[in-house]
Image (cartoon, rainbow, N blue to C red; front, side, top):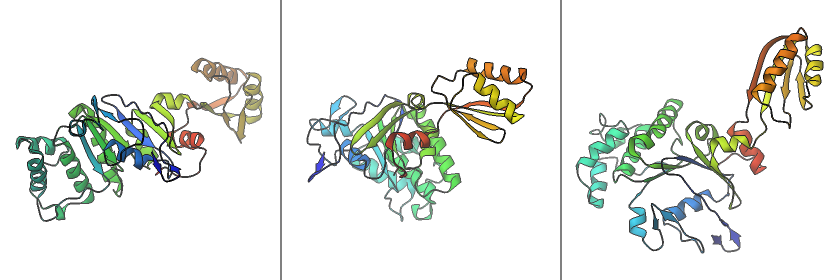
Length: 297
């Protein structure tokens, strides 16, 4: 996908498993928004294709998009209508059965507020109602662009729990773009990293974590004895801060190796108050792979 001389997307190939919660990340200008617009049929790529639920978007647009629901940032709702009336407008436009309204409201826990005017809703309630509207047609793919944007901590927590529950409640696959890395880390089963229009990673969260060298965190005293013992057991990459040691060895740090170190420290007369294996979090992994100090957006 090109804009003039600029290539926004280049050989982007994403395979999103059914039932997954897929987190889509990348630095500013990586091409995330362009990719989402292509997936929704708002832009036509110059080469390649988009296939949704077995339908080619270019050849069978209506069939492909019939299985897609989307919430793009703050949903546009009629403030003078109730939540139920807003959903009924969409239901009529799509020619759907009336019973789907209550089903969608139940999915997002908004039945109790459905008959209040949307203009009196909080931002979190509006997000939920927008989500209910996207779920009306029982989509197989649900695209969420910044679903927690602007929400307070309680609203973020509630939206996070709702997103986690949606695949089981609906059978839908969730494609979620966000600049809040901790949110993606807490809800996503799979992740895609994009930079300069290229895919840097596409796979499970566990596989992404495995790309980073785990660290062993040890707190032991006396510190000098602990340092000598750690070195004697073969750990060569060690950072010491008083009696706290961070070990990031190129040799695999396995539970057995950690247990052997713990035994060696006790044998040397050290008191061990902490010994735990720590993998890099999503933010650290993201910064390492993108080579950027920018926040994801």
